[in-house]
Image (cartoon, chains in turn blue, purple):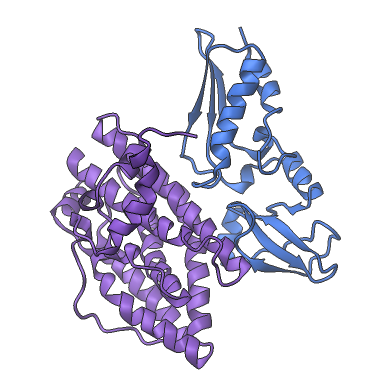
Length: 161
Length: 250
């Protein structure tokens, strides 16, 4: 019978289809992993953005990896509440985003909401803090488009949510 | 109560589904690249919320209909969206004003639904409220840019506002179905939401140097399935594939 620990190991192989350097655990979308007394593996995930098309792919990929690991009885559940926040992206996850060229969400959603303004975002290329947002909408639902005034390079930023 | 809840889910879902479809028509046609991406992103957010609500409507109904069945296999008269969201894209001012008016209503609505006694509606709102904030910021920025821009952009924004204002009344109508849900703590009273809408509209329009149209005749009927001529064309486009090839998947 599969153990919870083994499922967690397997989940590290499931990457975000749109940001393939970060896995579903680092992204913070896996809310719970259980093994029922009958030996059924139950993985509960939560969507990042409501319309994120990657969620269906992640669900399919989790199933695929678990089947590959020999699990026959499994279920991937979806839960909406509590709503996902970028605070759930783990520290190694944020480091990987930065290395990949995406400015990670630095500030918690709460602080930003209180201030009502835009956060200071460090350029993932040169590290400068003199950056400006070009558009709150980027190549995927989770990203905004920014530009660095120091190295002049455009970059993606993972939006705080 | 279940009937009222089903109607309410469809009203919310249809507003989002139809607006999403309208915004998706801009894909590849946006005035600048950033806006093309912005509108398709917004369309995706609205579609995501619509999907959650349609799936929930299917559960509430209990007849085994999926979100796709409900979206693709209903006719015009069974759609319960307001007439605002089905209006044509027009020029960019019309598209932005339509979204601005909707956003100014959608954000306070989502905030109020957070404390709905219905756990699923509250959970769906919990996701939507974060997105609704930057939707409103996006449309407000453009209203200000148009209104406080050139003489032509100002004129076009004012025209769009005057054209679409008549469709805002319907957003705040509380009929018997809605009243029943308010009593049960499921749906919010729309009076405070109208107050929040008014405050947002007044603030942004004054910064944009645009004039708020007078509340005259207000269009109605959408919430009961009586639509303008535009909805049929939208559905013809949106539903074609599932009608021509029933059950098709890919």
